[in-house]
Length: 279
Image (cartoon, helix red, strand yellow):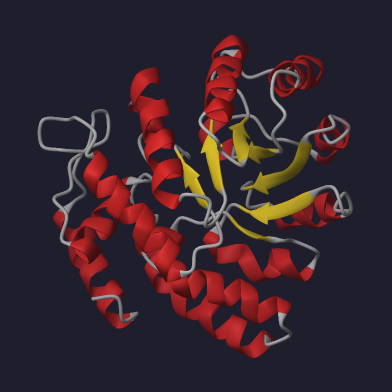
């Protein structure tokens, strides 16, 4: 965001290009680690369009198009498909939650209007709606539902969810501090917050794991923990956005209700980013 609150599309292009060069395996445009919830539809779609055009097919671009209004979710998903994204990340409805029956109907309604692969997103700490194994068992019957970003933090649920993994359904970690545990039971990777400032290392961790280089993967996972703790010391995405600003020399502005992090948080970010070799 610029100081006047408008979206800084030029900086967005530079960040997208940096991620390509650093080895990110994909980019989520308008995910929930950001301020998509404060964007009007025209801005939301313009951000997606900007990232798609900058990346230009070099890595997949996945658009966040979830909503607590099914009709709105359909609109964003259909428009994102027109812009050329490779997939959709669709968070569960929030605030006006849903029963199992209506939740399935919600996802069916959105998925029926697009031809893109869809990743479900369960983050009950933010939405107050947990995608249980029973719910996901039903949802994965929808033909273009191809995976889930699981951010419940409940290891028992994650292990149970891993039993649903097959060649048509992938399990992604939604928590940076649980990546290797999830990979160990059949996960495919992470949709990451720390990846916004350490994309190369985070991607390397995943690739090390699948190459059988378990010690190298574990070393990266454990080394990231202190920085992850600072990134989540205030409400996401306030600290990680400040961290991006520190890393790239970008002025950091927020849209209310988000605001600047506490001075202590900034100091801790500088300390841990330096210790991790980012600054």
